Length: 635
Image 1 (cartoon, helix red, strand yellow):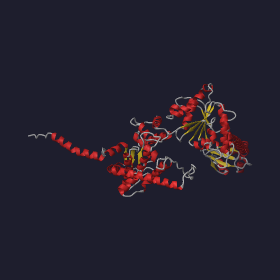
Image 2: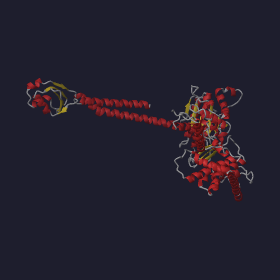
Image 3: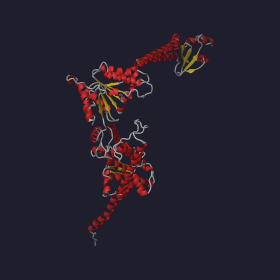
Image 4: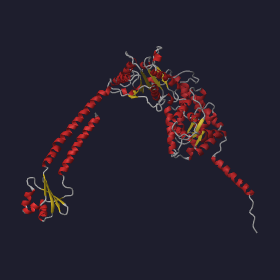
């Protein structure tokens, strides 16, 4: 209807333009004519210099013998012959004139009427018609206010472009759980014949970026059924009942296209626990949630519909959503482990010119805690970095640089620091690295740098070679000692500490508190000490003030023990500490292979290697010069 209104408006404007142009053409003078009084034309007639005269309404156009034209205006009540007679022009001269008289007064009047009367009527009528149509459209939109805004997509007919389980790397257990959904949608008789009922709702739980939406789309493509995609926030409006109406319309539309999949992303936006006071006095969220519960397992069960939902906050969902008959199956999507990260990197590396020397396994080891979306973004950042360096392929150095950028931010090489500050930062980071290298329970040191990134003046990267789910007491104690490495190194070398260790101390204190209060690894025994009431968990403290003092004393004792362990390690390995600090001042960044060589004492600095080459060069030249024969003199 909108297109039709535009066509009508264009037609009205075209008609008006034709009328205006026509009136202009009718009333316009001869192009290039000179405006003169009537007396001048009479004078030219008396001088016999006129070739032709055209009289049109009130205009007189005279063409002279030399081809020029003159235009004069006369009164409407007076004819041209009366004017000539009034100027006493002889009758013989008038008879010899070539006069062409054309009377188009009727056309001019009609054009004037059209312009002044018909055109405004057409314009006003067209505007009123368009306004009515817009009002009807607005009322139609108001009636559509309660309609579902879910987007329906059909599986791609091109199997090469279709997203399937093979395109989703990792998530082996999750794909096995969802494959039953695919089998039911393809062949429901297989399950109904034996009396089995497929789950009506599957809740995908996992951190952001783990592939919940991706996996839901893969299920729809594998089953080759329509896929309805919507978000929980699309059902929450300021008017009560709108969300419930949209839920009813969504399920009604999906039933017409059954078997089908309905995917509700961010379910916690509408599925929060009822009666918790969230949202103030607005009952819209609760009304919508009630409608979801009814549609999923109401008096009339839905046929051929499976609901998938995703959330990263399962703790806030209403209990009625989780009971059998609704979201009775929960699939947890964890962050990928090292093997899954390697598979995900291979998937996202397709189509990118990555050099064959790049070790995807090494990249997977350097990215613990990265989700699938993080890994995709990592390779994209590496491609951008390589393009900025005018490279035609992506190297391992580009990917490692992108890892540091994602974790810590871009390099701040423009930051100007004094030689003393550079030395302090070098010894600070060397303290972390040396402590981490010589403590058995610490993770391997992967990289040490004094180049500022983000808020950090430098950093030491230590990562486990394998993913771990459990952490022992010795590992926590080693982490606390390594966290104090920069603090102790500054005190040992410069006799005082700086503010650079503030973040380390914060992390150290947090580890010590968890060590005592939650993990039961201290001398206080296996007791859980709840958080304060101000914490968002709302737990009530289960200890007295005296117990709280004991906790503080135990935390201080553990930190003191970590301090003594770190100090002893750095004092016993002072030579390695000095060597690494000087190497950082020269090189600024040291990767693992060079770091291990420095700790073993086998690393050769580029300057030393160059000096050794220069020292060997003269002896070689001398030896070669002795073998040369002197030229014989000719007599």
